[in-house]
Image 1: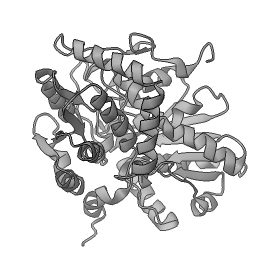
Image 2: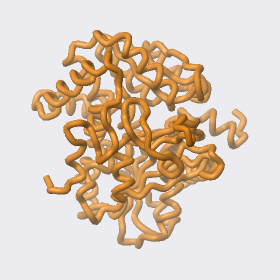
Image 3: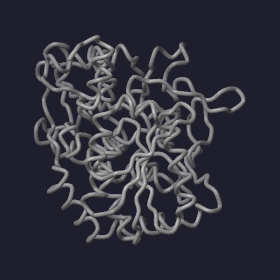
Image 4: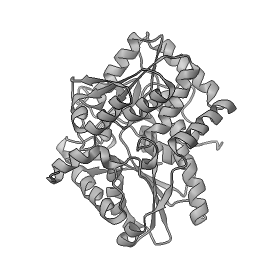
Length: 402
């Protein structure tokens, strides 16, 4: 481990620099400490790792392919562009990696009831899937607005046996779903395990989720070395809470020659105040058990986020991203709703891949920065979700009739 390794964080109290920590009620603290204790035990345990890898290979379908997007590479007249195709995982996104790890931990801890929050529905589907696999009851908290715009995933969760609890408070989206899930956990601490869907929340969740997702970057290193004989020049991924980006980035954080860009949702534009770019338009504060950058008023009230993408529609970001932002190790950029929609159509027509609206934001920025790279350079983008969940939203935006 390098002396100043980015990969060595968080510290024993769960902090990435000033960000992270454990801001929870007294009722939850013993359970959080229990989760940390058990995760510390199993994360280097050979039997747990073998079991985790067994399910990733035989059930999730890993490793996911690394695809050379030749038509986009040719069209942009710049670098060789690869997609890490995590949308080909079982359930259609990266979320299943983390859900598999957490449910195996929950089983080791003897928990018999699983709760989760979801925005885009992909984490909810992944949680419902692993609960069905292991025969555990599953309750998913989801904002009323997200239930409406993510109806295909709501249907999938119900087919898998999950109970969907609609949240009608606040912005009726991901933030409010997480609020309700935390309230549930406080009142059901004995038998319940909360599978958090992103690299946020109280310690150890940000590090634990990142660790389970880091399989993405580990595979990329091996795959790109086999295909190109060298590391990528640039990694790029979208960020809401930030788990898919950290999953790609973590393996390469101590590689100084590998540049990284994470893409926030700019909604109608940063100046419009209708966006979800907490780094570009927010400031440090505390939400959902951790200190991080948040969209908030001058008096500290959390402001509503906006994104066409339900998975990015969150007023905060994982604490490790806040640290990497202040350290300037990762560049943070943003894409608007319109730019994401344009990139969505671009990818469909040039590569025959229908992306989710989340990675469409990353592709929008990739199109802008490709001009800064030569034909000998390599860019890897995380195609972290497939777009069938977004078809109704996109049809409305593009005025396409079925």
